[in-house]
Length: 448
Image (cartoon, rainbow, N blue to C red; front, top):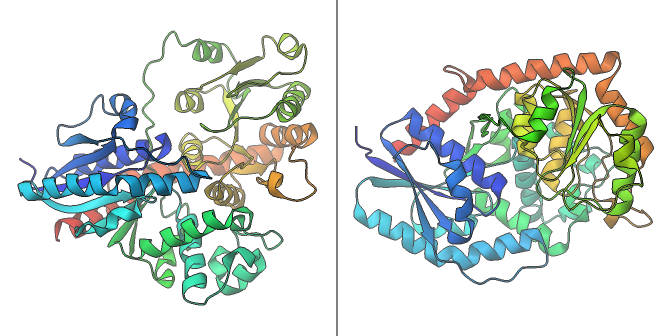
């Protein structure tokens, strides 16, 4: 059957966002042969496309728009915001051209959470929220406090939010300032303005599943949000043959469940002092370990020789393949949302160490609440806090690794992770909550 309806996906630059948007597009095309999908990309990020689309359906195609010069910005949020504004005209023209063709009929835009400038194109707009429902809820609530109640969200503490919005009490500790408090004023306003525009969409696809964040999903109506469709976990979890990849060959030689895997995302790197503390903790713990260390600084003298045979320190790591490997017994993670969903999918307990983003803080609180993780450190922005050296000590890191890998609580944690892993997989099967939620979205968008 020829496709009769077309959706245009508009991702933001960043592998974590791009991968999950491609995966949800593939899922939509597989579920309904009436749909065709067009991606509009900045040509600067087209290097990611080939690896993501090797076996993609013919009903998904990619349109590259011109590269534009843009300011690097004063922060990651400011950069992304300016990037989207610079490409708005080009995307508008590409969308108008697709719409003018008439067939397949353009029925909607699916935009990334940072692509709100693209809402103004006169086409029904939906959002794919690549993070969890809790972070979406926090953003919407804080935006409401600012624009409707004229409050300054950066001055609120967790205790204020607990009284004002009880369903988030478990996610925002009363003793700590909200993560937004650590942001620059410019970054805060960008986040709040984004959330204001989320309300203009016709619906929000969220990369979560009902059994993972039930209270937040159920309270969507109280947020005044558009229809929310929990459709996750949306992951690129296909583990292809990697014969000859040295690190997987090394893992094959280790006992099952014996290796600690440390990986902190594409931006996760440490200065020399912090790397030394991690190295000391790993050496003292005496566990086998695989450490993905980007931009490696100088490690303690003799460290690699003393740990030879029980360690591997590498740069890039094939994270999905590693987490799927039976010899991995625990994951020391920055709590990025994709990493959190992957660890759940592969029944992997976490030692949580959020480092540089508000969504990581929320993922951190979630996995602690569900008893899927142990805490290494929660002051992920201590470098911005007065009188703090910003270093997590070897004692704290070693303690977290030991809690992750040994003892009765570790065994109970593994059982809980396995239970939620089974729920994540069931959500995507026919009749599962995310399967049905995606069906509702397809019905809604095709009825436009």
